[in-house]
Length: 301
Image 1 (cartoon, rainbow, N blue to C red):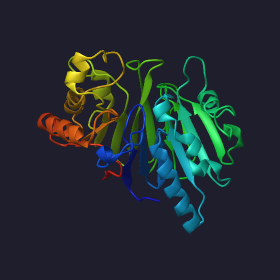
Image 2: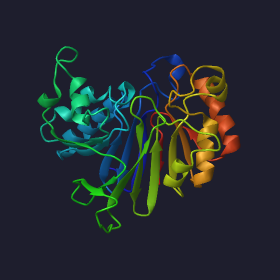
Image 3: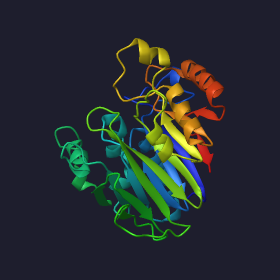
Image 4: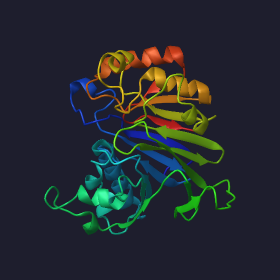
């Protein structure tokens, strides 16, 4: 269990995993971010990066004998954000509790989408055979999730429900964006003890900067923003409308929101370590406190 507000990157790639000698610095696993806030574990997306996270959680479980409780948020259900979940070992442990939240897309519940990825024709274990206690819920931007000391998430309607936050309560807010193909994507803001972070993967920038996202992220301590393409790729190839941004788009949002730190995320699988180094250097000229996400990067807020 991590104390305070800690963010750790477990998988930073988009599209598909890319192991090999040219991706050693930044890593080749797909999207997964581990967040600890006041002793509560939140997992953002379950690409292949979640596999190593699960292994580490199990080692801690065997050492401490304490059951694993995690709250998982899926930004959307494209393969690179879910493909690690069937290999997330805590889901096979009967003492684990997993609260899982994500969007309802094309009239399909999150539970239905996850179960389809584990059908017997393609995987030997079904979702319902996993021994962990699982609570799977759809969620949208009319709602917020509150996680109190008892570590049991509660869904609240932000328009109808009256609620006062204890300083130790974790609040997760949602912003839905249509700037991603096949159903859009959810972005998440996590707030605890006067600090905040925003996770905005798979978003495509707009002219002048995404003012909705900038408002959502206003004053945040950490902005994690998609930056899959270089500007040359975005302009010169048919990638407009694919739901991804450039570092320049990300730095615009960081400036407009007055974020304290920007981390560029969801790297293109074709970009090797040298190219990501160059993209980071260029982005730092536009927003100095910019870091290119890499596996193992740990930020304490």
